[in-house]
Image (cartoon, rainbow, N blue to C red; front, side, top):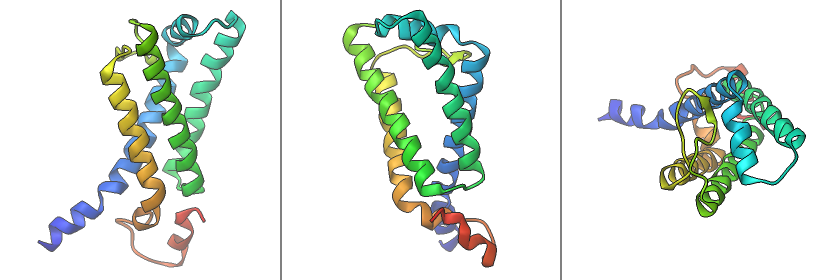
Length: 159
């Protein structure tokens, strides 16, 4: 029974690192194949090509910057709050894209994984937003999960 509780206590830790890997994967695929992202931005917003290109360039840079911050436990609470805001904007974009009828690949994962607007995208982004928001509040409990306690682990909580 105690072993099961130990495994359950590691779930936030696992989610934390999976989010970092998801951000890295998403960023790398957008960098390698930015066209789906640019096309989705064109369909959703009436901005100039330069602004769409800038947004398609900045987004993976933000994602690739946040992933190592998570992986190396840098200012955990702040980083998770920023990731939560990012995922919340992805959620709003999913709702908006579905509402205006965008039926093409959103470019969320470059051209590696197909991801179209709709209820699946809305639920995925809502889940990611909720998970990261939850992690903001429980981060102190998992910052040292699976590690031996010593003086250096006290700084992992990002405070």
